Amino acid sequence: MIGVFDSGYGGLTILKDFLKELPEYDYMYLGDNARAPYGNRSTETLIEFGEQTVEYLFEQGCTLIIIACNTASSNVLRHLQEKYLRKPKVTSRKILGVIMPQVEAAIKLSRDGRIGVVGTRSTIESGSFDIELKKLRTGVKIAKQACPLLVPLVEEHWHDKPEAKMILKKYLHGLKTYNLDTLILACTHYPFLYNDFCRIMGKNVDVINPGPVVAASLKDYLSRHPEIKKELTKKGGRIYFTTGDPEKFQAMGSEFLGYQLKDVRPVDLNKVKISS
Ligand code: DGL
Image 1 (cartoon, rainbow, N blue to C red):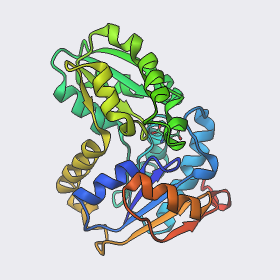
Image 2 (cartoon, rainbow, N blue to C red; image 1 turned 120 degrees about the vertical axis):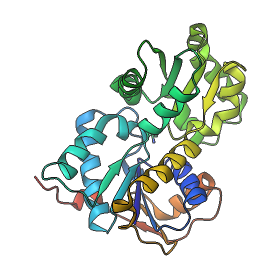
Image 3 (cartoon, rainbow, N blue to C red; image 1 turned 135 degrees about the vertical axis):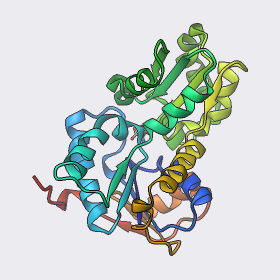
């Protein structure tokens, strides 16, 4: 089973493309809605939440976990891989994030190596995208902007309103002076404003849509790792867990996923015992 972890609803924008690209697998989605948003949380807190979630998903039978949340990927992915997969070495399980697929896509697309990154405050401050971009291309020029108001605007269904477009324009104003050729949307919620990002940045900037890029990367990863692929069950099952209100998750989640969600269950991650 493939576990998909996010702070709340946002990861459903990634799961949506997994279901399109790799529909045959069983998926277990976990949204930590009760403790969302993650965007302004400290690394220590995100580590605690990440450990609880990963232990829970492994316990439930997931062998591959995708951290669909950019904030969690940026701040805790390395820690989780180190703790659960390297000491001692575990080869039948994997934890992947969403940074590398987006970074690789940006490097491939970028003509002049002038790349922008937008995300939550914690993602931008972590420097996670800068580190990986610099590893793949020397001399890359990076410009970044935290856009903390966009997540609540999307969750309040305000992303189509003129106020949201005005705020986005203000956030992107500085980035536009860098003569960028590529922009990474390093937040699960920003695809709701994809057309506005493209319009405001202008025709010379390629804006990367995270869902299709992460799904294509997962497909490629599985084709290269038969040892992980063979551990995955294929009954087309989908189970959704939320630390928040399952009814609310069902309603809101259906909007994020684009169709009616079924089988939403509550989970209390505070009860998960963290191994040392
Ligand atoms: N899922 C988060 C991300 O991609 C956005 C929502 C939040 O701040 O919790 O960074």
